[in-house]
Length: 499
Image (cartoon, rainbow, N blue to C red):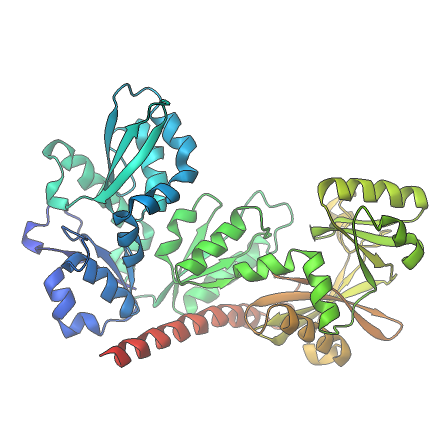
């Protein structure tokens, strides 16, 4: 991906930074070469971003051309609105108060240069403000209220030629660090068409991809024209640098994985897993309602609350399966074999959640897992129950071997058609024909029963890829690439229509 820096007058550019094309805002706005550029990232360092100024139009037209730009036109407008600044900075109150606690003045003017401040003790505040207001050069004004609290009253762009002389050496260093990231390594510009971020978490105890699979994803993506970075949970502020995000960490609504997905979607990235998929698939109550409405074959299910808990044993008998609404990887899923266990487990689940899920118990030696990509079956695998356990995962085991059962992967066409059809029907009913999903299906008395739809299914090297090999990774990366190019096509068509 090509990168360019847009300034008012290149001859006055005083921050150094080599290996990038520095162009004037006038040329960028008027020269056909820039209008026709694709796969480009624009860093808009205009002197002014005021409404209908050149700086404003650089960001606006960059977006119309399908180019990625920092700051975005939306950010520029946000910076002009005191009410929006106030709303967007609410979540930063703790870091604002702690950072400025020792300040005795009534007012504090604070400069943010590429997410940094010349005083290192304010770096966290500068970094957090940059994450919210993504513009390279900013100046914030804080005022201490009568209650003694600091408030952010305004935050505005700084023209690069308006940086104080005593700050210039710092800013040059910060600019060099900012643009010299691997993301902006000029030697690599022509080697890749797109930028891909893969989110993993070394602390994830049940990671959906093992290390070899992560390496495979990276290698295949690079072969397909992507520049790839591995991101961790603390890297959410970097999302705007990429064209696509692949989440290979267990996803939850109430943690950073959902925030990553939501941020990526808002920035226009292609995303696996999309935030709506995380939201829907993570909740068993939602899944139960949709599958019943769409007539997807599934076990008899009851949504349990404090008023109807006495109906569980009457409807299902014992044993019965109980689930937390947001249970994953067999965590939060229990089997009640006696009335005493039923009451105990319901007490525990309903203490944590207002609702629980009860399902009829269907004993089996294995569960089918059908991988579904963009509405079509991708792989088929049998997950056998953990040794001496009723689930495929036994987190109570002291050994790794005892925690997981065996597996058998096969071509999709060798799996029973009624199993595959049930899996695809469930995905289309719940989330539509976009994204990667793993559907757990029980085969009981010759019939399929969809247990759940997972939006972040396992893709482990040596398991799910046994049949397809590299083609499995190629299909998933290809889905992201197709999504990017569809978005570019829509943007390009819109630009042509507007001319």
